Length: 394
Image (tube, rainbow, N blue to C red; front, top):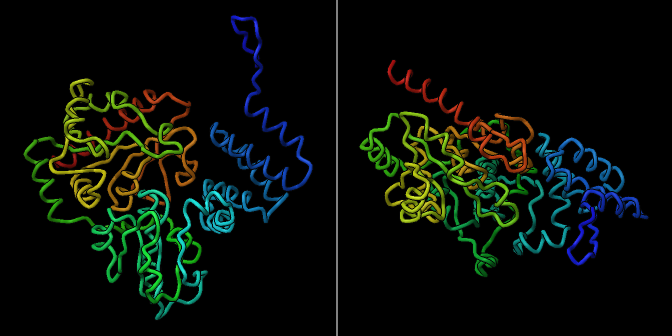
């Protein structure tokens, strides 16, 4: 593609897809060809061309099945098309041998790595990784590990301690900092393992039951507050992601949700982390949308309170962020609005998701046309509200 400058100079830009194809043609070894195919696969995923991306990943794996970079992304591709158990094995075998991934996520503990050995009567230290939403999603394996007869300790984001302590019996928690606490390596554990890597052997089932338990007393407080407001239905909204890698692609603007507010008999409440009551007042004034803040709730740092607030709602509608992992793990009806090239965990199928059976998925078919998607969601919301009100009146 050529761009003519005012000076008369011509600049030539090579479209990324063409550049990657040229890199594939120039590759001289199987390793180089496999890495070039992975790059093409990732490019096609970002463009929403999932079938073509899977084809490239399959070709890369066939060429160089022991290449860590190939295994990492081939595993992600397998999980994207529904092969979670096969995919997690390849992903895990690859990712810990990719220097950038290892440096970013691996936790250095002195205990033997758990690789599926019998756990009856043993003590295992699990360490959470990645974002808080990932940690919530990964935690579904904890009851499976406990059923194997072992004593479980977990190093995780300290914001999860209260919620996880209530949800998982007989488990010891350690707050996760930038580096592991030195005292942890002085304790007596038989094994250590990433909470996500544990999926390889503590295999989570499709359509699992809810595995997190909110504070019933705090939920009651939120429900009383909502009752006083007098809305027949109450819906929690979240619209922004702070993820550094692709949060901007998932984020929508609150005004794009305006069609939701046209549906009668619904109160809308902010579950958006990073937006306090004063921020919300400014948003309300700017957008003229009657969204409310929930009293005494910090949706970013008070995860236990956020879980209780969610439990008081009839429905959660959100983009892909930690909010949906929390509502999914609580078993609360949730509608998730996804960009065209969503994360592997949301698969390829509309509406259904085996990781969270209480979710409905809505996919944006174009790169940035959120208003079209929110209009479609609003149509379903109108139907949902009518059905719920009929049931309440029956």
